[in-house]
Length: 92
Image 1 (cartoon, rainbow, N blue to C red):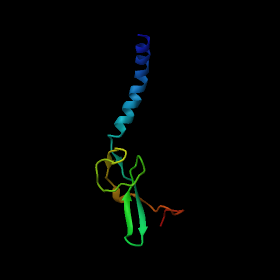
Image 2: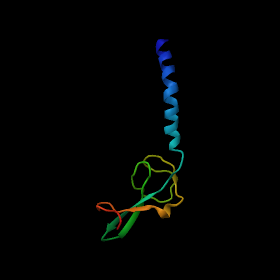
Image 3: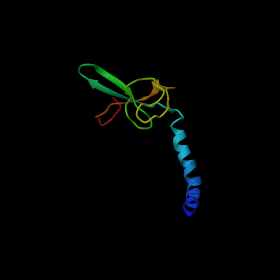
Image 4: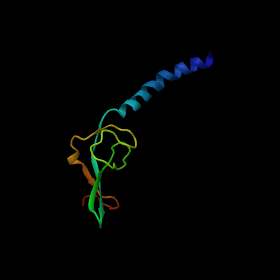
């Protein structure tokens, strides 16, 4: 009985935070970065970056990140910041 009372005091403080975290994955985050790789065979190839987990996505225009589950918002993706990995400055 004592343990049940302790759990009841714990739940009101944890539940709102847990709910906020879980619901944040359901709200779309805007795509803001594209990572461009330069290859001698294929030339320049760009991959969009998930705004939550910062991992490049293999496919474009998917509704959710296949790694972290974040819902994606593709509005304004053409204005995404271009990143060149391995360079000191990312301005070309």
